[in-house]
Length: 160
Image (cartoon, rainbow, N blue to C red; front, side, top):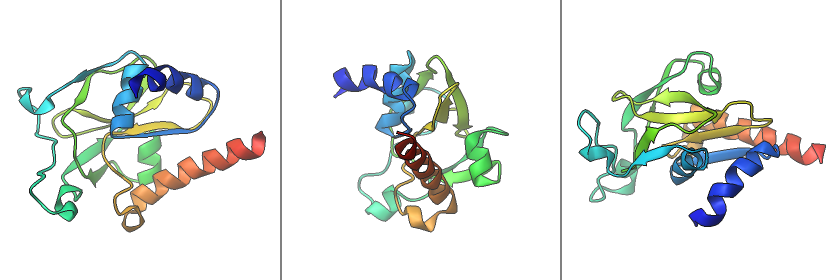
């Protein structure tokens, strides 16, 4: 999966295609832009265990796990209308080094990067480490992110 995805992601973004990376897509975007990942974030001193408890029902696995702080003035801050939101957390990997041209949009309480945008992107280029698609209609914040992505996709389609 990585062989086509890693080179195509920066090319698609440079071409103006709207991109919304979620969870693995977040990790792939970071690597595609030259970043690195911690493979077992939970084993790193000072970091939370961001993995889900697979023994719990899905509602708990995908349920709210921790707050994230949104970068003031960033895309997510504008969409949320506040500086922090609560998100779910279902990942073992985390950003070790942020890729080139990526701008931090949100961090977890332990400092782990939870979201970024691509600096200078001609269109929507956002990646988040959590799963906003889980019960998205119950979350104003999730709906706002998907609405912004949809608006960018419609704009791209109408402009072609």
